[in-house]
Amino acid sequence: MRDSSSPGSMPAAENNGLAAEAVDAIEGLSGVHPGYRRAHARGICCRAVFRPNGLAAAFTTAAHLQEQESAAVVRFSGSSTDPALADLLSPAKGIAVQFSLPDGGTTSLVGATLPVFFARTPESFIDIVRTAHKAREGNLGPLELIKEITTHFSESKESFLSLNKLKPPASYAESHYYCIHVYIFVDAQGKKHPVKFEWVPDAGVRNLSLTDARQQPDRYLEDELELRLKAEPVVFQLNVIFGKDGDPTSDPTKAWPEDRRQIEIGRLYLTEVITEPEELLMDPAAVTEGIELSDDPILHFRRTAYGESFHRRRGEQ
Ligand code: HEM
Image (cartoon, rainbow, N blue to C red; front, side, top):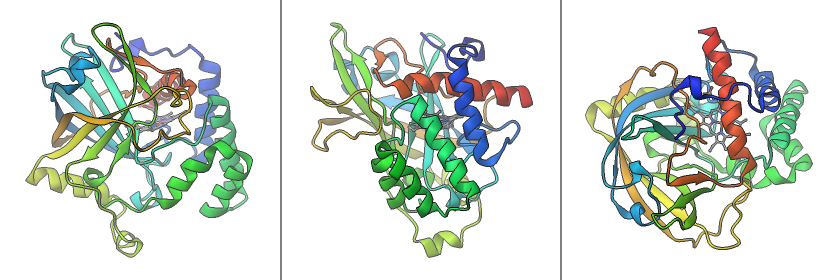
């Protein structure tokens, strides 16, 4: 079992060279903001309960996906590296969910409002972020920047196309989040099932027009969530999508065909906004027995990059 909540378990030194390069490259985008996450810098945390419906039990032995409910911490965030940036100016939003497990450990799922990622390998991630940095120094606008990146990195096309289509969300609670990578469910017989996870809002998806979004305060998404939770819980369905033979498992820039089998395996009930728990680290590679990582190099790399960011920000607090 890996425990992402325990900082002592993080591999600070493992693959540190490339992770440090990646985090340096990210810091190049808007400078260092001491104490903040190097990406998805500003966020809001909530207390939650996850209630599995039992349907996943045929495909995985993971304790939190059987029938017992588990406590969870949820953090919504804007994707920007700059914690002061207005919500409107960071189009992609994130969700990170840390489930408490019956044995005292934790496991996490991290998603974003984009169905695919822009880089296939850690090395190309670093090159793309550095290209974005240079383009910014050259004062390119957002559309020119996307053109510059997709001209040089064809793997980014699908992701930037989705980014370009994103509209400002009306609420963190009315957004659909994709966990992007493939994970492997392992059932009681040891059989493996490649899956992707998605968080689907019970309230439906709702966006704002640009005119309306421009009239919102900088932190409208946090304000809205606080107000909403005072009135009622926010609910998300956790869906899994099953891959078929031949569907890519190692490439987060590629979507699976839309007709793949999809089931709801439980619901997440968010009840109140809380202060961020100390030393919270949402590691998307912190899986638990019954779930394995796929062969996606980005998924494996995120563990060390998040560890690097965690160690930098913790040292600054
Ligand atoms: C090479 C790939 C990636 C790198 C290097 C990277 C880097 C980072 C870093 C350094 C952080 C801050 C971690 C911390 O201090 O706790 C972070 C947070 C985050 N990233 Fe990524 N990321 C990558 C891919 C992705 C992908 C594919 C997604 C979407 C599925 C994603 C969504 C998020 C979210 C939602 C957070 C905020 C987590 C939280 O609330 O604690 N990232 N990322």
